Length: 118
Length: 115
Image 1 (spheres, each protein chain N blue to C red):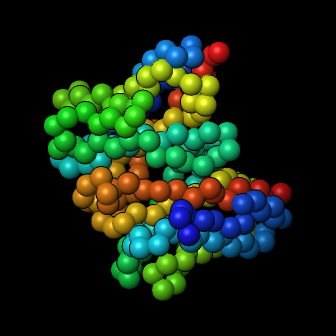
Image 2: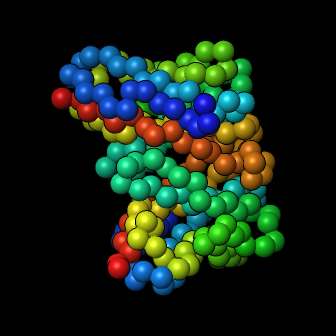
């Protein structure tokens, strides 16, 4: 597609359930990022994939959060045993590759998934 | 540690006037990129403008320009000839050329354009 796509756009779940959020980056973009936007915390980096390298998980808030990227393209963010504080908008972004200039630095964002944990 | 500071939680501007949104940053890395994103009420994060740390000239993109003052570590966004559709949240962000290359975001400024 022309841009980053994410699904679902909205997800309501009960506390304790597992959820999966999907991101489809721009075709040809090798780097993929997950961010979380919540009222109290602003925009936080969660995890980063670059090509086939091991992901940088330094931003994941707990071991309930995990992500994978299959075939260097689509990524799935999984939250296990959801808690109410996980309620946020989860944003995915992609770039052409390693940072090094305007073409590779710029991250393009998807529309986000709004997660509500009841 | 990397930090982006936006000191204006909210700004108002008259339609057709210019407005400056402030952003200061802190990093010890010599190589980085600076960005401004717009987030309308619909929620998508729209890329507006980019400035590289080694760029000699200030970036411009249509009605957007970035007033880059490297010594002061500031990267203010100037929007000229404001339009009603400019009403949105605006985020300043920085991306280092090392590590995860993730974006560090400021807390944002909500701009309201008054007709």
